[in-house]
Length: 323
Image (cartoon, rainbow, N blue to C red; front, side, top):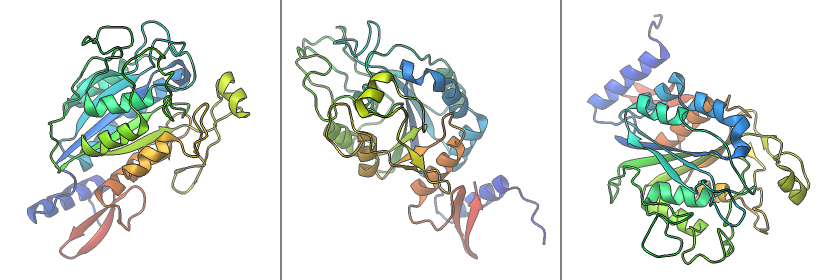
């Protein structure tokens, strides 16, 4: 008998059958947080990033697998001091609290503007920490969050303590993949500050325990590097290759400036949270493939299905259904 159901309709029907059996097809409460690097080094990329993130295809795929998903948005530049960034820049900014309204979320994404930038590493670790904790950062510990470089406390929209059933996916877009304060740098953001910015260990602890997070970084490959970084490492492009079958990034252990570490912080965060680093092409043209892989892995890490498919279990058998 010929099947007249579309792949999407088949998935919806299967989800209905599973629901009637009391089996969930996805987390009942899923938060999807985008953290976007808006420094000048991302300027050639940000328009493509915004277009792909807000495309109907991307949003529909996410909401089909995660009904009721809430979307949040944050951005980061760097601390405006000690040559890291210029006046008016910031290490973290909450752009949009978690919302189920994809139109509101898309408007916030489309409002992002790229610019600024002082040195090559950015405030990625502090931004990730703030997105989960919302703790704020009082550099001189004077009780005010209005001084230069301070980060006011913010609320992404989490319920604290977070229910164990509520999952968060962090999608981080940053380039180049070089983090400040890794390892801990006492001159960052400025030698005179009293409180220190978040370390990698603090970020790992926060995203594991405060927002039940899986951390994913999307990276373009073989893009030109700023001259300072190129001279530091002796190469002119990001040293990435990728698996053409899966799209996974390979050889992405880029050291932080001045560090002897063997792993990149993004790699460590992904490993600690059962996440991943995804190669998505220089213009995010493979973002939809990467998101399908993430959705499949998040739903069932042991799934036998291929990328772009979801495992459904029915009374008459198990099937891999295209997403």
